[in-house]
Length: 124
Length: 89
Image (spheres, each protein chain N blue to C red):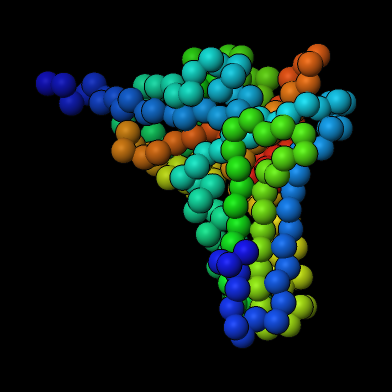
């Protein structure tokens, strides 16, 4: 949280994405996340820079975990601080929406019965 | 004397997620004539790994971390990857 603090920021918006027990393939006990790390970091930076351009942001932090993550654990956290709440809310939504569609990260849903890669969005 | 024989490039291609699992390798090497394009590399990949035909139109190719198509010329110095549909978050 201290990374988002700024004495001129009156608002901090945080999005936390957790692994849930139901997925597209049914029951889920954990998710395996894989990334093309070099490209993912470039894309995350690109999205963060776009948000900085579109909204009056003081601080922005975006973290995506990879590897095996159990139900209830956090896979992604986006935090934005701004002078007023509107910029923080909107920028936070922009970053999470774009991370989900533009960053080379893949998830495989794992249960006791099976494992299935989630069919997502083709990069363009 | 060898001027009529085309030189070849060995292109390393990284695979991710379902493509990596199906092929059983995180990196494959494809031999192509020097000066080849992304679309020719794509054809050679499917020739060498026919099982990837079932994923045709279900992956894109990145060159140096940029998704690209068609006529871009690639060399063995480029970083190439096959990227299935993404599902982060």
